[in-house]
Image (cartoon, rainbow, N blue to C red):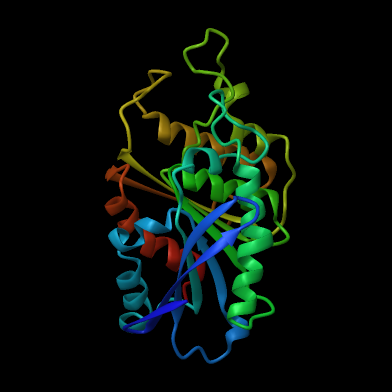
Length: 271
């Protein structure tokens, strides 16, 4: 493992050999320095870790810790994707209509059975105050799916411009129906309420231009708001359990997600 000192943060990186994914997985760790009580530290896993430099995660964390003193200790673990991103990210056990996401169950197993045990061993932490997962676009869908399916392990999901359109048949098919064929919406609708779960969603009005139902709202926002309604119908409180952030000028890009990251971190772990 290699280490780099950043103001207020220790940044380390390593490469794990995953038996589940049959590949090397590069992982970056952003560890706050001088944590008085490590048992009170939370864990945040982040998909698409290769984008953290462009997103500016180091600087964001340094500012929140040192300049603002606004968040509790948080170990951020950024997982780099592979060339199989569209196969490893998705909804576990439910590939989309093009069979994308067919390795999402293997990625879930890597996270739960290989990565988290490695983190606990490496940092000599038997447990965390809480564990959360965040991601962007398709990585946001994957993060949400893992949190939703493992509520005894995770407490929060952060979904930035999430690919919540993920569907079982092509939307150009005559029988396509939003209420039947969006996979994550169906997973939540047919799932169960789990006390303690909380959700953060971010969208931008410039995420895309598609508007399949011609209601003058882009699909990514429609899909997100519809999923929030599914969560509310399941029993989650709209004000206390769900946070929705919409940028009028937000795009489907890393700089936009970097703008949203401080609000997510303060929402989840603010003092």
